[in-house]
Length: 284
Image 1: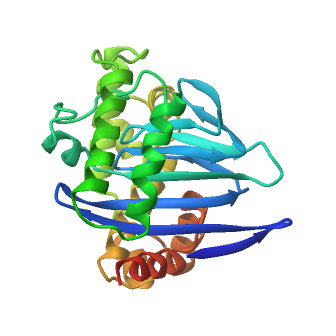
Image 2 (image 1 turned 135 degrees about the vertical axis):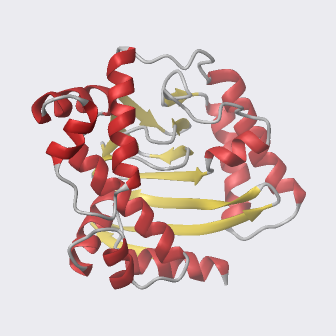
Image 3 (image 1 turned 60 degrees about the vertical axis):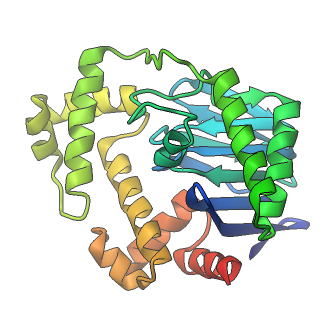
């Protein structure tokens, strides 16, 4: 459990590693969260429900207001930001299942989402939101067995069946998407190394300035911001596997431990040490 004083109320963030028969992934519960999340993305799906308060969310596709009962549904790699709209912040619950788990369950069969899976990332459906909450609470509390797992799987299945866009369309041109995929592949393959924008642009056959414009148009952030997020996501995995903060910083291309700590907290809302302690306590 991670607690921080924010105004009159105490913000509490709990992180848990959920081990199900279909695989393992992170879950999170945040109460009275009143900090702003800058643009970021996850390597996994990020799906959850707002319980109280309200937040404004931004993606490349637009702006939405999420209130109590609203479902949040972001695909892997979908850049989004969030800011609270109430003085006491907002309370929400999330799960982060990887694409492979949804594919193995037969919920989503594409090997890789070329575009966001869901038609919109903020969905007004109080009934389905209640279903997610009822599945999430016992799993966060450490419940095991087929019933809580099946409730979550049913919720994911219903969400995809009702709100997925089977066309997986993007408003960007195919040429821009292909260029950005080339750039993202280059960054993913070399995220731990020093990378010059000019080298990425040369691989893509564009000038650095043109690459930045195209990358922002398709992804929503600059190539550099995307690279930092890649490094944070990889460091998060290493930390959960037992690496020290210093080792994770070195392995993932950060200049030093403090650099990783600053970026980790900016992207995920908590410092790396507190995040790992919270995950380990939930697994104990």
